[in-house]
Every structure is written in C-alpha cells, then in structure tokens.
Image (cartoon, rainbow, N blue to C red):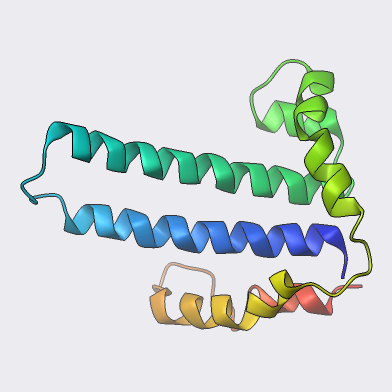
Length: 136
C-alpha cells in the first residue's frame, strides 16, 4: 500500500479521535472540575489537533506536494525548515512502500464511524476512507 494512503488513513483516525474528544468536552461543559483539569483537557484537544495536522502534512508530502505549497498552507516562511521537521517521518513512512499494513485495515471501521455521525451538511459519501484503498 502506498505510504500516502496509509498517512491519510492515519489522519482520518486522528480526526475521528479528535471529534470524539471534542464531543466529550461539550458534554462536560457544566461538569464541576478544577480550572487545572479544564485547561488540561483543552490542551489535550490542542495536542490532538497538532497530531492531525502532522498526519495531513505527512500524507501530502508523501503524495509529492511541494514543500513551498505545504509551508504556505502552514503559514510558515521557510520550506527547507518545514521539510526538515518532517524529514524523519517522511523517510520512515516511505520505507514501507508496497507493504501491507494494519493501518489500512481500519478503513471500514472509520467509514462506519462516519456513517453513524454524518449530518446532512457533511459530504454524502458511503466509503470516504475505504475508497482510498482503491487508488493505484
């Protein structure tokens, strides 16, 4: 399986986890917890957002996106610095080119999760993640 597809599936997994945690945060709005606890929960969400962004960048880099374009999208000035920050991850994921990976096996679960949570304004796709597996 191509590394960029695996990275995009990993990004979808991170988005799902972020969505679940954000929904829990809404549910805990009136919960009587300390300021420290409330701030720590918010920081956990921010960390998950950063992980999601990193997975998306990784997928785009593996798909051949130009570092100038990636840097611009990240609102960063120096493409070489951004490329350097992701170099190890890109090399690691690229090393698995063509290998079957358990990361791809979760696509159907992600599609089922999407179907359960999809609202009318969301894209009307039956298999938004599993369709990645059909790309060559």
